[in-house]
Image (cartoon, rainbow, N blue to C red; front, top):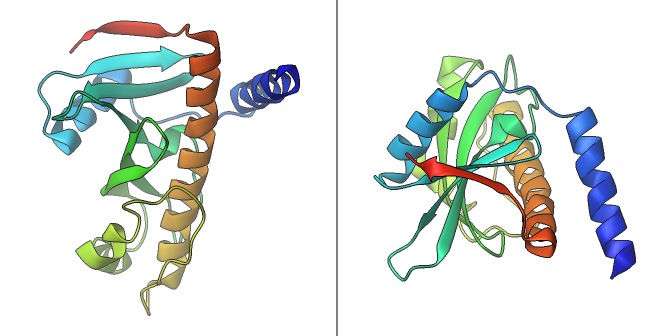
Length: 172
């Protein structure tokens, strides 16, 4: 148990030191969370340098919204594609949405296809994702971005649960 706490603590320190500087302000993050989740009442939260939105689903279970650029920035064919990800409290992906992209517009248009993004729903571990011919590099970058963001956020959730101590801000 103590070894796990030490490993998680070490990883959080590494993520903080080598963290990804997001280009998205907290106000824009909140706006994206509202528009992506279609939920009026969310709580903006921070833990160390990590930020996320939290809200409850219809059954009262917590759902977390993260933005991939806070955790990962792999480049596709010509640029980074930022993804909004909703997860349950076990780290299972509930939804994904392309928020913005610096990549080639015609490739991004293909990646926004519902069948491609829906492959990530239920995603809780690395799995085989079908790529889109002609947009393979963009697809791979989106996949890596989602994998890394989810993997890192799961560690944040585990650490928060162990410490039961994180900085919640007011509902926005």
